[in-house]
Amino acid sequence: MESTGKIILVVVLIVIFVMFAPMLYSSAIGGLGGGVLFSSGSKTLSQPKANQNGTIAISYDAGENFEEAQVHTSTQPQILVISTYQKFYIAGTNNGLIMSRDGGLNWFELSDLEKNIDNTTTIYDFANGPGGTFYIAAYKNNHGVLYVTNDNFFTVTNIWEEASMAVRGITADSEYLYMGLDDGRLLRYSFAKQTFEKITTFTSGIQTLTFVGNGNLIVGLNNGGVYTDNGTRSKFGKITTPSSNFFVSQSGLRLTKDNQNRGSLFIASPSGLYKSDDSGAFWNSINTILSTKAKVAALSVQNGLIYLTSDAKFYKSTDGGKSWKVSEPMPTNSKYGTLYVDNSGKIVIVGTRK
View: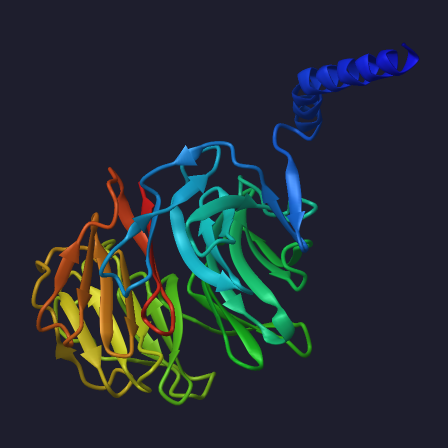
């Protein structure tokens, strides 16, 4: 009888635990402010809150076929930049960071331990530094901020900040991180000295920065101007643009290089799509499909393969722009805003903006 009583008691305790465990778990979530955080290694990811469709799509066969990703966020983010960090995909949005740990199929909110980067932070650009450091150009509380992490986002350190001044583009070489500001200033940060200095100030806000050729730094401005330092890092000369109506104000300028072909530089503007094989000295038109008023949202080139997005369509050319494949990677009411292509050209990720 005594053994039977013990068995009955154990069964009752198990039933009580099963009934009340979810309530205790929910209470623990509430105590953490509405979302449990869990750590994978030293990365802090949020539990899924909702699935936002029509936000990110990924292709594993160079843009031939796409699969819609699941984005687990409380609100639908605008995807502003996509990159890789360690072995993961990471995206900057108007509501902070999201990360995928499963090859781009599922994306979750990402925050550092002290929440320096949270869902009130806008992320504009990423850059890799030496020794595994990772830099993030952001805007938070009406301040432009440059963050750095060297421990997989467990901690994020603010190393530069200025009121009402966004950092739109960043890029790095072996010695410096270069920052393009909204007021046209080009700054650089010394990795060794951990100091900032101004290189020059352009006549318009800086939209994009990239290296081409033998390390030439190319700067694209909001007013359509394109400049090169010819490797000097101090004196910049204006690149002659391909046509007289090359740029239409507020329409957007897209500038990219081909990582597999030194000196190749590509520019997309409302007057067309152009390629230069000598870092911008001479240009050839390669636009054979877009209208002259089409706005290219994102442009990427890998080993001669050209990828771009315009509105809610994805364009791919394997023959230098002579012919194009046009597709719609996922059902969406938004327009594509960013594009990531890996060095092999096989992994292609597109993200939407409103």
